[in-house]
Image 1 (cartoon, rainbow, N blue to C red):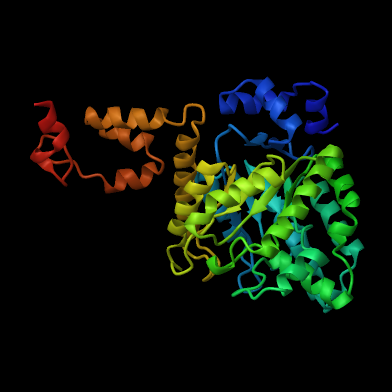
Image 2: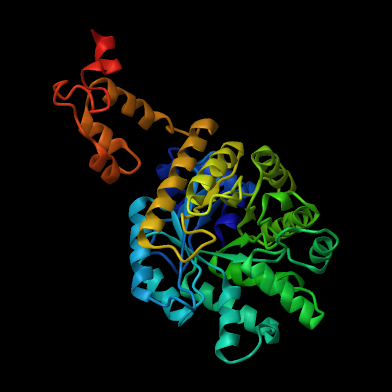
Length: 423
């Protein structure tokens, strides 16, 4: 039985107890959330070297980091270093989005070294296999796609992105309107192109029950991908995006009926004024399923600083109810991220997640902030460093004031407001 099936039978598993302790809630709270579909436990039954990860309502907002090779940069050792940097910076999960080199080998190595949950996008591997065999991506068969999904499950992948909502109906909605950027999801574009060339329906949608059987076998969480997400704020919350979301809501219900845990992926580029509405729509249409958002990015003009852009959007999305934030690095839209980009992306997204948790009143979210304020009041510099979200950077920037006898930094020195206030 899967975690969902056990929860419905009233059983509290060891995984539920572990995540309950991590989150500071009761195991029964976790069980009820899983049974309702508002909480998922992410851990493949074959990937027991990691701790189970809980995502969902009333829990700490989680952060994902993307790593992976490309055809231009196939440096496996560099990706392992990125994995290490992401985990050290506090990522709760990592997705391997490799598209260059031996993808099966890369995935297995990353999984063997990871201390956190691992996600993948199987359609990438299916497509790369075709290219490596000098075939067109459109020559893929349903068997090619499902064979790769089975392989991912067997290897222990904890969650997979599957673009089941890119269907004849949703693509038709896209064609009726004039988007600035069309389809910006790689997986979404691959599926739409395959459908167009073959004049057939998306196999992930048409043979959804087959997908559910594989996911059920490994208790692998399905992350229903937003293949038609907006890549420009002018395209946000349009007919295509909403049509896909409606389809995903129905598929989420079918997954739960089959005992399969599911989360929903969301946009993308969204104006600040539409973020809260997007979260509300997803939660209503998908019956409260955990929401996994990329950013969102509330402006299109900040390449090089999109980790900041996404942190702004992520904080608002999280406060409105998003449960899982996918990081965006300074390299977004420009190149494959470096080690420094990965670190900065995780830290920026963790800041957004924590701000959201304070707004949502998540258990003990404000405790660290209160302790930090107390350390500032007491001029406890080491305490401030230890409590900060990035201690190494905090420590490297700190300059205590000699003129103030260490009771103040070099910004104010003897004129420190806290010191003067105490006098």
